[in-house]
Length: 348
Image 1: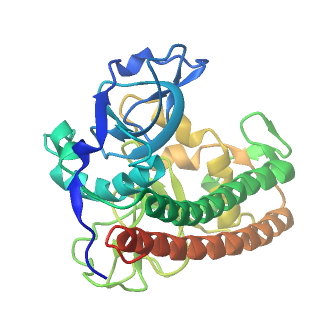
Image 2 (image 1 turned 30 degrees about the vertical axis):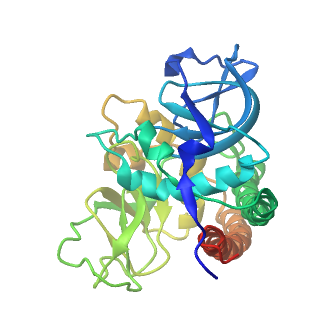
């Protein structure tokens, strides 16, 4: 099929920018307030009432579609078709959602990258009949709906994990069902080590864990068995992970190994810390950080070992479901990217 002809997006749309500061939001406001964040805030008044696409003008950039009354931050671009019988808004949304990859390359600036209005007006919009635009938009909408359902299923399973913990052991912060204690007597704690000399350029079966989870692969293992990993410094400190086998842990994290398995199960300890106020308490510090003592002396419920084992078995079943949904979501993401590419290349 021959390539689709294109023309400058600015010929088909009007582009405005919001006028408000980010602090203009109102928590109980009636209308959406679009900033450069992925999720809109709320506001009590509105300045716009239209069917449009909103493009974040700085930061990581993102694209949204909204129809109705709203207001917008001053670095948010409001892109509205001049004629809905010539340009379909859903088609425009999907085009810009794909084109945002290009916009990220075009963005300029220092710490916070931004785009100029010309980056939008000069975007090469495929010129297609309105019925063809609607057909393409419908296909992409359906694919996106499937992706959304998978994300919602994963979010539900995350909620189910927390609910299961609270049901069996109570809320560690407010109403634990079992006496609380620290893990100091039952574990060994150490700092991770630099991965500079074991970092692999190609995938291996040995993940490297840092303060924010897996961030590479190693040529050798620092730990052969599963261990608990806690982010040590920065905004991610206090986050907890459980390795699944041989792994390397960097010096951005603290490693906790269960020494007395007659008293504690690592998977239980992981969720006990995730369900406690440990992480949020750390992040309230001026310079968020943790040391080994803060972990070892943090109180958690200490239920009998058989209950911990029952919990671990149930969590394993939930995690198997999550793995299935993640694999399906990965396939849907790849399918959606392929559909986007074909749609705007005249191959769909």
